[in-house]
Length: 258
Ligand SMILES: [Zn+2]
Image 1 (cartoon, rainbow, N blue to C red):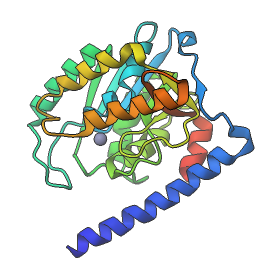
Image 2: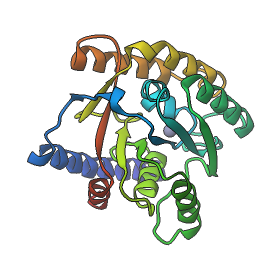
Image 3: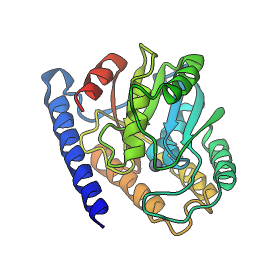
Image 4: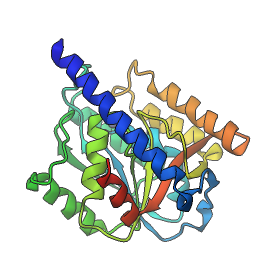
C-alpha cells in the first residue's frame, strides 16, 4: 500500500515536470507551429520507424497515420515488449498470442517489417549505464537508419512509454524527424494534425486484430473517440491523429530537460 502511494506521488511529480517542459517548448516563439494540418502526401520514399512500447500502442497512437504513409514509404515497427506481468496485475494472454495478434494488426495497417525487442513488460528503464539495452536499441536503429521515427510522447504518463522515448532519443542516430504520439496522455498542444478520416475503419479493424490482448479493455473506444475529437476540433470533420513534430537535435535537447 505504502509503495503504491509512493509510486503515485513519484508519477505525479514526474508528470508535473513534463507538463512544464512541454509548456516551455510550445510557448517558445520559435515553435509556434500549433496545429498545422500536415501535408502528408509530400512524404515519399522515406524510411519510417514506428516505436511501440507494447503491441497495440502503434495502432492506438498512430494507426491511421501509418496506413496513410504506408502507400509511399517503407514502415518498420519495433515492439519493445511482448506482454507479461503488469504493474496493475492485469491478466494478459501469453507473449506468443500477443505477438501473433501484433503481426495480424501490422499486416492490416500496412507495416512492412516488424521487430520484437522482447524487453521485460512494466520494467523498461533508461539508464545510461544499461549498456545491454542501449546496445540492442542502437543496433536496430542504426541498421534501419530511419528518416522519421514515430514514438511515444515525452509526456506519456506510463513508465514503459517514457523510458522507451528516452532510449530512442538517446540512441546514436542523428538527423531524423521525431514524431511524438500520445496514448496514455492526450497530446494537448499538437504541432501537426493528420487527417485519418479515410483510414479510420482500417484503424478499427487493426485494433480488432488484438482480440485477446484488448479483451474488455476500454481503450479502443476511448482512442477512436479522441481521434474524433481532434478531427472535429482541429480540421472540422471526421477523425484525426495529433503529433508533436521536431528534429532529432531539438528532441534530444528537450528530453535532457525532463
Ligand atoms: Zn503501452
